[in-house]
Length: 289
Image (cartoon, rainbow, N blue to C red):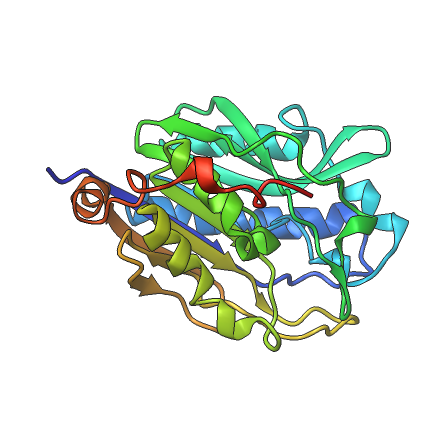
């Protein structure tokens, strides 16, 4: 039986020079995303996910303690409070990735999940952190996530989150499936080059291996002065058969909309019995350091 959820992904450029004040950068990006969220609402979106660290540039392109100032508490910081108001105003679920301060000097790359009444449901903290050339110095800024792989029950489906570099690790994607996820969002900041060819391989593979929908989000443009490469957009949704069903542009801001029939999950699982045929008792190396 069809269960249709209209979902949206927002991809956007950072328009504010990175040498502006932290406050100005955040305000510019927040204002832009509020307008894009309104566009999604006008198109009937019920669930909307923003890009990784949506309220600023991808500052991990350098190692500079200045950016610690941009971190906020979750859910008590101003950005999440504002997004709770937006979720309630539009009657939509919001997935909001920001830089989180847990305590003084302890930071995470986190996504908060807010329901359509504006209630804070919880958060996912990115587990897998790159620290490599050129310009992905995430261990300078973040502590690895410690909250497991939660799935959030909403009126529009069961939602999981996996952030950017996480997508290279199928173990967490499987955990989300076992925890009941129907839609998994992967907000990202990834540039053309080494891993671009994986962009449309790994996440559709997670979708088909775990028989859920995946929403893959990538920001757009280049960010001076770092210029680590082009953030190539092309945000998309993949269905439980691993097929890409809609895709955004490569080079501009966009709201990418898709109608996801959550009833398709049951249909696909009735054919491909991957969860039934798992052999966890035979896996000995997978969870060892």
